[in-house]
Image (cartoon, rainbow, N blue to C red; front, side, top):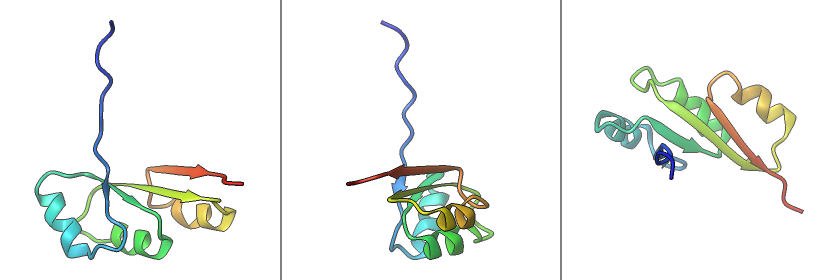
Length: 81
């Protein structure tokens, strides 16, 4: 057996106010997951949060990618038919 894979906890921050996310940030959480574009942009621009935001969405559209690429570190997408 090889070494154990690295595991990273991603806190789901959608619909949560920035104040809650900052509290988790101060407690050591650095990775947050969003799937609402407007919330993602607002939260990622907060000067207190120097975090890695992950964007998750089904049926990802090009215009959403163009908006998110400036603030997210990882984009997860799935096509559901």
